[in-house]
Image (cartoon, rainbow over all chains, first blue to last red):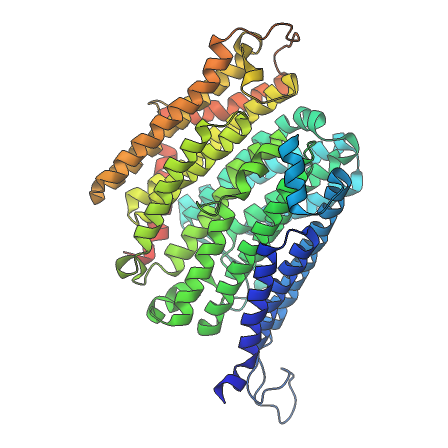
Length: 117
Length: 496
């Protein structure tokens, strides 16, 4: 049963490794950025998961609410998402310029062109 | 009115740079943007010096953002280490700015110039934020502000290779930052706090807790990526080679340095009170990586034909010295590390600025194209020689002071092989500096070489200010040494 209870953390690990593997193994510059996104999303899930308190609700002052989940990690992750969006946007913008300059977005082909010049 | 303004200086230090950046974006005129950026960097330097003076006078300044008390709110806690970093960053920032005008005009396409000033101010805001904050998550946000803007500044280089360099730096830098927030998350999971001072009281008691140990690993690897510690340095040579010269000068002397500071903060302020240095093997790991960087970086620098690339590899070696100093975990070692951080910022900043002057007139920074250059650009090349002496560590230069302290620290620990490594790395520095000097001074200029003149005064003066300061603080080293010793004692407060 412990495995089921920790399912979120397992998802985090799987996502993290998948994303990291894509970043390292793929030559396509856009796929690398997608991998980077998956890698970051795993961290978002990690933060959200650790904030959850069993049986807790949203932290609103109201009658009958005694346990509530920790809202701080959610706020932190909101910031991290914004940072992630900015990184993705900048990364993709660079890929556009790289395609203009090299005519390709495959890392190995770019390296081949650089080797010739 | 003035009294209340003074009490808000810690916030203004960061906020002013952050506000000035969009102003440059709106103005769109590069002359006006330059004026604002230059004025702003000087104001920031004045604020940093005021803060340093107040810290020296009255001790640690604590500033709660928005009036929320720590550990709930974000706290700026300025002790000597923070103040020292603020002064380094703003000093370099304000010397590079007057230089940048002519250099950037030659190296960035006209319609994009105002973007450079905008990014420069954002980068400055990020670096100052890292140096001033006392909150680990806030540090992450500033780390990303500075990183994102540096990717943009690198990609502004004329060569298309700059785009690839910026892209690779983006991938590596983001992985580093993500590792850092994983570590922060794990610490938060166990302790429930993000405030550094609060963490410093909670974490040592939890020493041995697996989550805390894993958090430490993530934090250190993440920051090592940002500070380009061997073997995580692969992004650095390309980035510094292809970025515009003013950007290389600024980033090489501030970007990695601030990451070194953050590394020391995490390692000593937060984890300092625990036993990581006694039984973990961490000291051995860091010392061996530092030595690998010192020897490896200098050795690879020998084989470079592009001088900017040569300086970039030399930077990797110099980062090794800083990490070596920190990993001694003694006051003298840490002082050596911090003083070298300051001295190297001046020397390497100056040397990259020299390369900017050369590039402006010659259009190239390859060693072979610099043959006989000393006759045509005597002041510029003299600055290179003076800065090169600093990298080697010849007496009277600032580089000598930091190496002297580093060797003393190693001797205090009885680490003879480390002393040998420092000397070997310095000898390698003699060779790579000599290669450039030989080409510039002892070879005739290539036949049919275009007539070139000395770089403009607006670039030469800041270059010589930077090099001159590195000599001033080599001859009269008491001031930085006193501050660095104080900063080392604060950082090591948890250890002793």
